[in-house]
Amino acid sequence: MINTIAICGAGTMGAGIAQVAANSGFTTILFDIQEPGLEKARNQITKSLGVAVEKGRLSAETREEILQRITFTSDAAHCVADVIIEAIVEKMEVKTALLNQLAEINREDTIFATNTSSLSVTELAASVSVNPSRVAGMHFFNPAHVMKLVEVISGTQTSPETADIVYELALQMGKVPVRVKDSPGFIVNRVARHYYLEAMRLAEQGVADFSTIDQLLESAGFKMGPFALMDLIGNDINLAVTQSLYDAFRQAPRFKPSILQEQRVKDGKLGRKTGIGFYRYEQ
Ligand code: NAI
Image 1 (cartoon, helix red, strand yellow):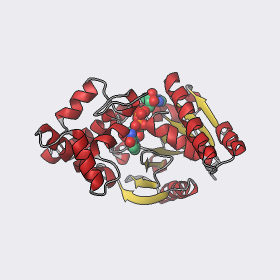
Image 2 (cartoon, helix red, strand yellow; image 1 turned 90 degrees about the vertical axis):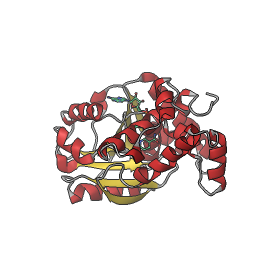
Image 3 (cartoon, rainbow, N blue to C red; image 1 turned 45 degrees about the vertical axis):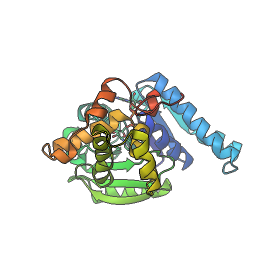
Image 4 (cartoon, rainbow, N blue to C red; image 1 turned 90 degrees about the horizontal axis):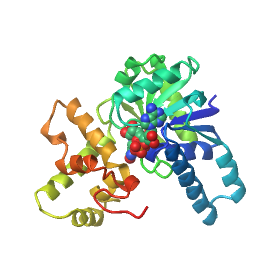
């Protein structure tokens, strides 16, 4: 029985996942090493629930109950839960260090779910001192409180029971889970890579500018143009995912990162979260 969920990383994804968890009735712990990030997440969740109240989808009382269910903390020692959902930076060594730290304070049967977009769940499970049968991928999409799809990823050592619990948990969170095997980028990110990379190649070659490409693709039926979407995702995360697939596919040219994005990441132009990426945003 899942009662408590600890979400690690209060960034773009963690804040949204915490909102969904609390909204679904779970005692929720949201942990981040950065206090300002936690404050931003608290504001974002409060604002998002406020919109639901304004639209009459939620009562003010329920909003308060949801907020009360979330503990915001910068102390890893508070991350004791039935399920840990890890949503920190897309770097294997950082994820491994955190999971090892949390393994020491959690039960043997605690489930460790990673929200990684591209790293191998199998490799992560094998690199940590966590029971590998209790490690799975739980890949939410951005914005996590809106998007229904969740990829449930089984690594080679993930037990069927763990995959089932994660699948059920996604259902309890009102999501649409889909089981996928552990493979670089899983399904959506692998296919979507070319949406971003081809768009950047077009811009690099001077065929059209960012907003023209975005407008055309949106007119063609895509919900968001590639440049607006990369800014929403975060260029650092999007580049890390591309780099990870590029490495996993042995430097196949079709996954080669774009200089346009590499330059933006070097310049700190990460997208919406920094106020500037391919476009400028009011903070
Ligand atoms: P982000 O950069 O917005 O947030 C990451 C957060 O993790 C930051 O607040 C940072 O302070 C925190 N952090 C870093 N190291 C930490 C540690 N050791 N312990 C606790 N907190 C730590 O990143 P974002 O975009 O939320 O991505 C997080 C994960 O979710 C990544 O694995 C990414 O691949 C995945 N993801 C991202 C999506 C997106 O659209 N941005 C979509 C789906 C998955």
